[in-house]
Image (cartoon, rainbow, N blue to C red; front, side):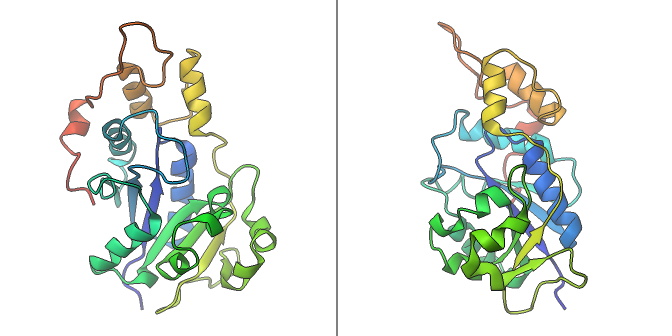
Amino acid sequence: MIGQRVGILGGTFDPIHYGHLDVAEVAEGALGLTRMYVVTSNVPPHRRQPVASAFQRYAMVVLAVGHRRGWRASDMELRLGGPSYTSDTLARFCQRGYQRDELFFVTGADAFAEITTWHDYPRILDAANFAVVSRPGLSVDMLPDRLPELAPRMVSTSVPGATSVPGSTLIFLIDARTADVSGTAIRQRCEAGESIEGLVPPLVQQYIEQHGLYAARTAGRRASDAPPADAAGRLHGKD
């Protein structure tokens, strides 16, 4: 019997928002995860460069998850520099003593739909279980048809008894409602001077507003890289 079930939520988090948090919470509840690591990417290989600095993005993750029992913000990828690859991150968790069947990489259905473009595919699917959660516009029920070659490895959590298999890895499909919000929409609202209340946790909203993140730039104005004191004191040793 597996003693621990560790979730890993990775992302650029520019900024972290309720869409990210909903996906992680749903996976935690559906699979009985005992810990959740939220890993901020350094340089995302598949997306344009982040607007906020790595320090700012990590500070927002700390503020978003610091009060959640069993959740930890991780700067694992930030400390390494260079492009952030999920396969490398999963390998590091295994190097720390975790078994691959204890690990659950948590992601939205929209991101998983592009899994064939990920670095080290298809071997990455052997490095951990994948917990895939529906996102607005793409239900996990659509994934077997989108990725027929992976359908035999997919298990719906709506089926009683769905669990991980010692020594092997599976793709768990979790159909649930998650917030219809994106980092792009948040950045656009900030640039337009519109409220982002309800899209990000209150402490994250406060951080964004205090430091002028994503706001339209004016001459002589620059967003500060400094996090609030309560975040700065917890920026290291969280992975």
